[in-house]
Amino acid sequence: MTEGVEVHQAQANSADAATTAVTRSRTSSLQAVETDPGSEEPDQQEEDSSSFHSTGGAEDSSGGPVAPDGGWGWVVVAATVLVLAMTLAFPSCIGIFYTDLQNDFQASNTETSWVPAIMMAVLHACGPICSVLVECLGCRATIIIGGILSGLGMAASSFAQTLVELYITAGIITGMGFSLSFQPSITMVGHYFVRRRAFANALSSTGTALGLSTLPLLANYLLSSFGWRGSFLVLGGVLLNCCVCGAVMRPLGAKPKMEARTGQTNNRQLKTNCLSITQEREGLKGRLRATLSTVMPFLRRHMAFDLLCSNPYFCAYALGVSWMMLGFVVPLVYLVPYATAYGMEQDQAALLMAILGLINITVRPATAMVFGLPRFRGSHNFAYLFAAAVLINGLSNCICGMATSFPVLLAYVIVFGFSMSLIGSLLFTVLMDTVEMSRFPSALGLISIMESIMFLLGPPLAGILVDSTSQYTYVFFACSINGSTAGLFIMLSFYWLDRQKCREVKSSFTHKDINSLKPSTKMTIDCDYSPVPSHGNTIRDTETDV
Image (cartoon, rainbow, N blue to C red; front, side, top):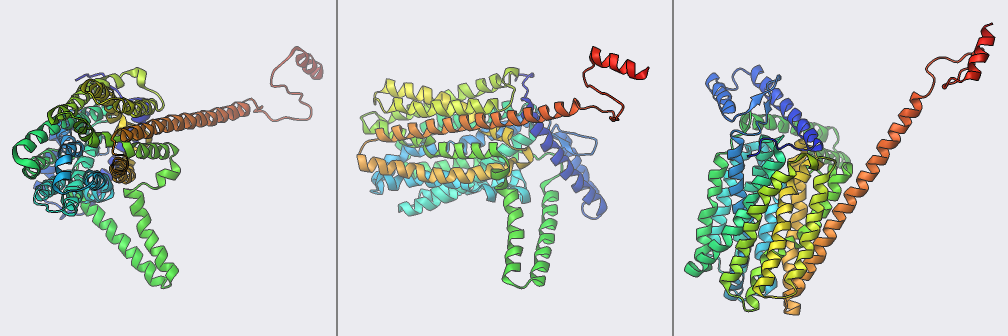
């Protein structure tokens, strides 16, 4: 690992704000425990202290936890790599079973494409639910619950007799388990790393590449050996390993029980306030205000709708990323059916997916080390790199539509995989640069909701296009237009916002300079004052004195 990896100044400022917020929350929790002697036993308090110091963290002057930037954090990064490999990369291997599912259920492309679409949509739509569980139970327990749900859902899908049952088991239940596993993992990495956050995020994002390179080959082997039903049953057992990964993610500082206890107290106070308001105002207007007073704090905490109005950078980034996701995962779903439909063998098509994953494994750590160099520091430099990667990723889909030979598709996979690696390395880093770390979970939840709508619409729209034209080529051309326009939108939006910010800063400095040139002494009738002395003024002052 490189010791000199640093994050640019904007990211450091947001990290400092996050550390201050965490310090205040921990200090208030510790003070609440000290005022209540019977809240915890002395042995339990000693265990909490030893557990905190074992994580490699330190305490500041106020007793709050500080991100260790190493130590047990590397174990958390390794666990996050495995979680992302089993969650974010899993929908891509559904393309291996696409033709078998279509033939077994006698379904069209549109009907079959709903399986990965629902899985990815639910994966990103359960962000608010995940935020609530993280606040009440902590990241570790939430990841374990997600591993259990995803494993049981995938195992139950092997017994599905209709596509509707497959939508529920493989789509809703498994997708919800994926959401509860991967989002807390990313949050834990942000808590353990501040100075090396860009490197840690890029390193953990290699989990998606690891899954892309191994899951298609594993799925192809299981399909040839046990069929799609037996494969789903085995993959359900593999997904239970998310529980093991969640078990090693030890929280920093106080245990989640203390946070849950504080959250329950706040909820009771909020309910009491709502009841008092309802009693005082019995009319319809009073009830509406009471409901809004309950809903709005919840939305601000878990959905970050207020950032869409107060933070223009976050608004532009959220809209651009959401539009990009409409066609970003469609090539991963339709690459194998596209290759096999034009005469390529199933093994070669699965090999293309594996090569795509290997490129991601190779490029993402290298980009992490390069992006940690001082030359990349600056205002929103990562955002411009991210926009350029999205633009290249969109244009690369035109290569796939030109021919169906293995060399052409291999060239497409190389370009697509390289740009995909840059996007995966910078996706969460740009978001952390755009918002404060204390608002990162809620901002991620809102973006996940917006992305889920696009994930739900992308594959079915591509299926409709294939059913109406009987060609997969138009799908990749449509994805090319989608990705290129998203990249241009993010790039131009950040450039315009930066120009506006520079103009405001220059105008404020100009105003201060003008004020500094004004005389600080009081003017009188007999005093002839000039801010810049001249020879004439000096002679006149001398004559006046005489």
